[in-house]
Amino acid sequence: MGRQHNSVRRKLAIATWRPPREANIYGKLELDATEALAYLQQVRERSGERVTMTHLVARATAAALAEEPTLNGRIRFGRYLPNDRVSIAFLVTMPDGSDLARARVDDVDRKDLATIAAELRSRSRRLRDGADTDWEASKRIVRVLPTWLLRPLVWTTGWLTASLGIDAKPLGLERQPFGSAIVTSVGMLGLDEAWVPPTPFARVPLYVLIGAVRERPTTVEGQVVSRPMLTVTATIDHRFIDGFQAATLARAFRRVFDDPWSLDRAGGAPSVRASGGAQDPPLAPPSA
Image 1 (cartoon, rainbow, N blue to C red):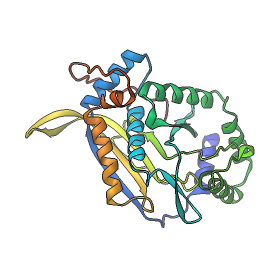
Image 2: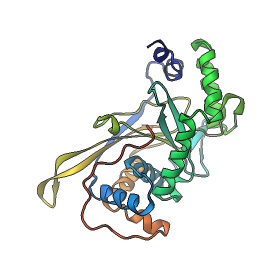
Image 3: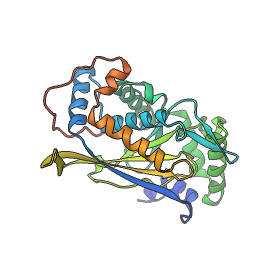
Image 4: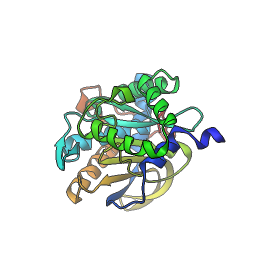
């Protein structure tokens, strides 16, 4: 228990957050997952890769960011600067559950689900095996420093790496380590929904959280039917978004979930729609 209480995750949390005082927007979407589940099953069979709802939601998030460049950026010296690519950071749970690490995948808006899944699986394995030198270096620093010194350090490194785009390799941090958005999941834990608290040192405008897929009643063509439903929530920095950008996010998510095969057509991959709707629950992803 003592090791759990003094984990890297807990020390960073204490050093990072203060009582809330900034305005954030919290959004929630209820999505019919029937087509998404069928599509994921088809991609698994076609590619042999363990694609999950996490990968699909990340792809939808990247599509929205690519469509709305006013969301895909960062603030530097009080001015908005667009990012030159769409990168998504996934939260990876360590084997004993005591710590969270991040695994970034670049150009998510240009990749198919199997490629996204393979890259995330590789990065997650390195983190869990202790083979990621950047993560190991940052862990050592966090464990050694007292909280009072860690607090200004994480703020400064976040500003340098995320806002200014400077590598901080001695501290185990690369340029824009959290990319354009953070995607994580609580569905594998059996939770239907939750909201991600903003992480100041990450300096991203968007946090997306994936709940569990549950059979729930919904209305289809005027009839109440039972469908597998997914809750996706978003925590958004109000400096980046208003109603127009929020609508762009919602449209991108609904478009992907209404017709996930459109991702194949956009990427040039073969688009063969599976007959019927697979009702099996999504496999737990290696992240979150």
